[in-house]
Image 1: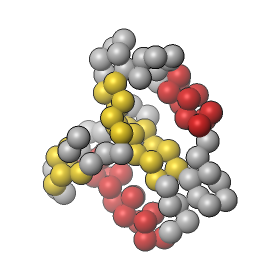
Image 2: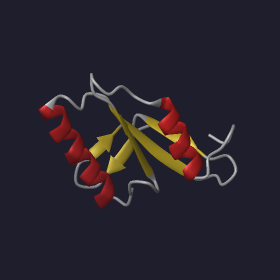
Image 3: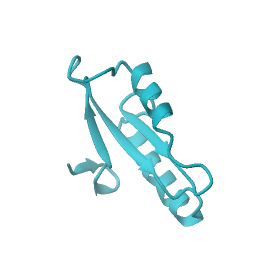
Amino acid sequence: EPLFLEGFGVVYPDFKLLNVNTREEVLLEHLGRMDDVEYVEKSMRKLRLYEKNGYFLGKELLITYETAQEPFDSRNFENMLKEMGFSGKTW
């Protein structure tokens, strides 16, 4: 879904998760090319815009990332969700 960020315009978060128990939405951005300096710089600007618009890391915003040497770790992702109160089929 499109999301309007003041100071930038419309962005498209990679995913929007809904905790069906609490009805809270959390945005998820996956940073998949962290070996690319330009990509990292662009991603950092986007993360700052999220913060300026009230989406804070670990609360309304989750980040996953990977490089060629360090691929995405789904177990860590599942643990992150559990720490935030998502469990089983609540997302």
